[in-house]
Image (cartoon, rainbow, N blue to C red; front, side, top):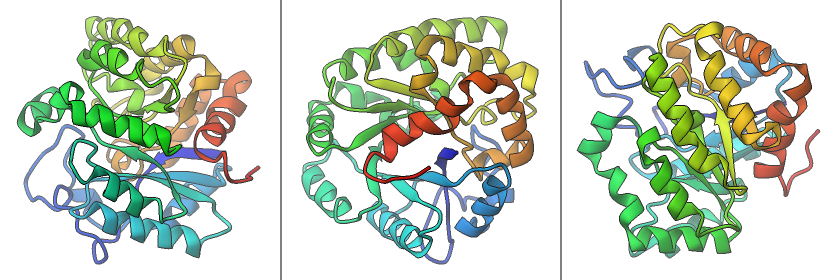
Length: 293
């Protein structure tokens, strides 16, 4: 099995300003409990206990993105028995985007790029990332990563789904992976219904797949029952061959243990979908150049 979305950090090796803020509650909760090193050894212990044998590291807001990517690449090389690839950060809207991508592609573990467009409504208004979809430079950057054979991890809020579909429908050769089920932050019955309707704009695009991940960020006391409608909607809209599992650890450790996270979602996903969602989709998407079983 493959964990298609997790993070690692060594606070002595790479600087993560957002992580070390004191007294600053974020949309995903209070980061204080995860203001510590989270190593590959710890992740292997947690995930390996349930049969996971490989993983995808996702960039996580380092002060220096290339420094983070080089550190992750080193960790991947040091642990050949645990195949790990990474999705690195690149600001696709900048003039030096091509140079950034050239440097990232010197690292054998880099298979894709994530530049977050939407985290939560309040934070996006402050950061301005939700304007990226209107940027011609950003779209040129998307074309570049498509030409280079890299994928794009898409993190948005539901309200941006239709606009995203308009943009990403222009890049049909680009593999797009929707993070965190499209971030259904409003967990009311009305909110889930609106999210499910918004999701249709992206699920109809054949080049877009979706991760069942990060479901604890907007519901810190989530249960199997509370997230079942979300996971089932994702599977029904995308089909299991375009859905994959991601733990989002250690961020989601703020809302559950790895054991509970895996067991609850495994119960929802069901035996008939296990091979696709826990392995084959991620293998096709991220590990096409590596042989894993």
